[in-house]
Amino acid sequence: MGDLRFDGKVVLVTGAGAGLGKVYAIEFAKRGAYVVVNDLGSTPGGVGKSAKVADQVVEEIQRNGGKAVANYDSVEFGAKLVQTALDNFGKIDVVINNAGILRDRSFARMTEQEWDLILKIHLKGSFSVTKAAWDHMKKQGYGRIIMTSSPSGIYGNFGQSNYSAAKMGLVGFANTLALEGQKYGIHVNTIAPTAWTRLTESLMPPSSEKELRPEYIMPLVVYLCHDSCTENGGLFDLGGGLISKLRWQRTKGAVLREIGRDMRPEDVKEHWSTITDFSEAYSLKTNTESSMKTAEAIARIQSGDNDLGSNHPIRPNVAK
Ligand code: NAI
Image (cartoon, rainbow, N blue to C red; front, side):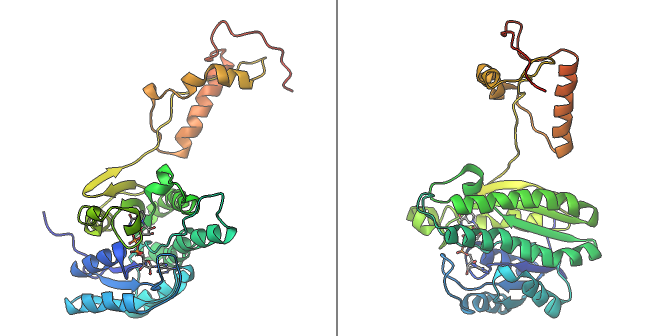
């Protein structure tokens, strides 16, 4: 199997001055891409600004014979980042939304400013950069976009309600972009990585540094962005060398409505174990499939079939 090359492709990596983004930027350049190395150069908490980190990555790429240019704007100003790609390389093919910060605090103590800042950098920042690139990708009939979510969003994590909300927001954002981009050759996929970086080093034991290297996240990101990859709308949980794809499951559920009777909270209580029973769970791929399930249930109700059981109490019909 040949190497996955990116010759002639223009790749924008946000937050590429450190951690995961740096590893991506260097790898894309090694594989022939023209790379925009964006980094504001802030602290993990989002304070300050420095051109140094992006410059260092650009220098490293150039030293190795690659092509890269730095951009120091915050991802809030996505048009400036994309303009750097257009000015220097004439187009934009790949966007890796990666820049990020943390403002961890228990929800009871979290301020509105801490909430807003995290949503602004992660969710609005990814919107802003993607929005600026979208029309160019549409016109050229090609694009690859990565959103960076987090296990903290998918599973929750103490002290990260702001971050979790932003990271799950990105999953929903990507779900719709994947649908809207498909016919223009734009693929949008989301990763939920675990890696030892300056962002997470205080949360992890030192021994994880060598087992959770950003280099173990990079291969999936590079593959998802390659011409040959047809994946679109995927969500991947990965770290330490393991790569898994995620999907939603729903239970078979229970139909608790009957013509001529009210549907009551007591019905829900009585049938709770069926509603939450995953033994016959299945996955749906689209919103339409979900609506079909609702339609099937309505058809069952109309034909007198439901899951209430034969011995449920007679109740007066007060529904109008
Ligand atoms: P990092 O702190 O090593 O790198 C993030 C980079 O983003 C920094 O160089 C920083 O200067 C830059 N940055 C911050 N705000 C910026 C802004 N407004 N505009 C442009 N650049 C900005 O962190 P790491 O771990 O490499 O994180 C990368 C992404 O992966 C983040 O979105 C993070 O939330 C996500 N992530 C990381 C996990 C991990 O285990 N390391 C876990 C789950 C998600």
